[in-house]
Length: 207
Image (spheres, rainbow, N blue to C red):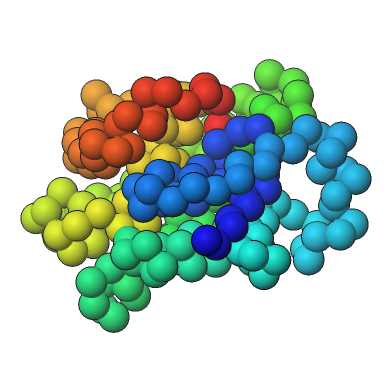
């Protein structure tokens, strides 16, 4: 049996999409959650000094999106056709572009920045980025009649974006009452039976 070990902080963050792919596939994995102190000791040994890292029987994969794509293709959540795969990949690229802006706020929360600085980042950086990001996502959803971002079935792009919307909701950047299309999508993904059961039991973290 293949042994999977996923290493990240004790938070959802960039590891949660991988965790949910394991849940959907009913595949066991070692969920290795680091403290800040443990991460600092491990950091010099990591390919880019970052987590998450996925070990597959000793084979090491770094970078979150690469991990998600690997698992999605292995477990059947990458899209049904090459065109669907390419669309899912492009949506993830949109998400990663947005994350460049959002990480200023997320890192500020994680490392205890002042409320004044958080408010500045919120207004000047993240809120404008959210507006554009949401407009991109809604174009995909309005074009696709299934309620998913790609094709007729759940893909890793849906999982990653829905998980990100949860973080944006927790930090008051996403208001379901104001974004009906995104709210319906978020609910649809989170009510996927295996995910719903997992989400109801998982440990809370704001990000």
